[in-house]
Image 1 (spheres, rainbow, N blue to C red):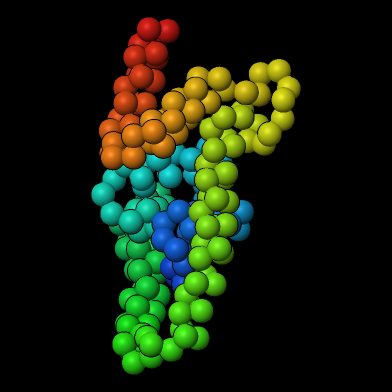
Image 2 (image 1 turned 30 degrees about the vertical axis):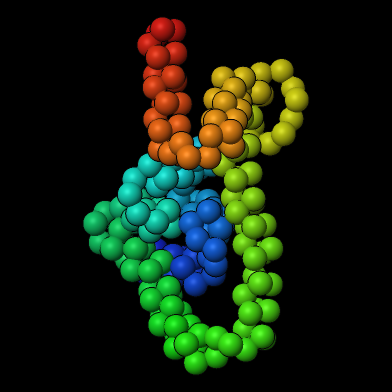
Length: 189
């Protein structure tokens, strides 16, 4: 039963995550945390970090990770096939349609109208990851002990570096933040 659940959950994610990996994050959260409770919010934040750090698309990495956690190798395979299958079908169909009708203004209008929705999904995914990273409760609440200052400072520094020096690799920034946190942990341990 878990294998079918993994396949169907990630099939839905794959079918409706227009805009790429970050746009899929709210959909992954809805399935993995809200619907099936396979991961906690904290585990989900770790999943996003791991999926971002490893090569490959985030949605596929997330599917493989969750599938493996819930059903071992077969679970990873079911979830990964589920998340990839809709894209394979959609891209094949869209390539045929686009090749035939690409000059139509209606086609261009449809593509342009999807952009704001994709931006909203990416923003939502960012907040889903950011809030539990900076606030202990996972929600914006300015009560004592709820704010993680070090996490906020690392976020602010990484954001500043990525905006100021656009050519710097995000991987370098992630590694630098990891090294800084490791040094802090070693000093305070």
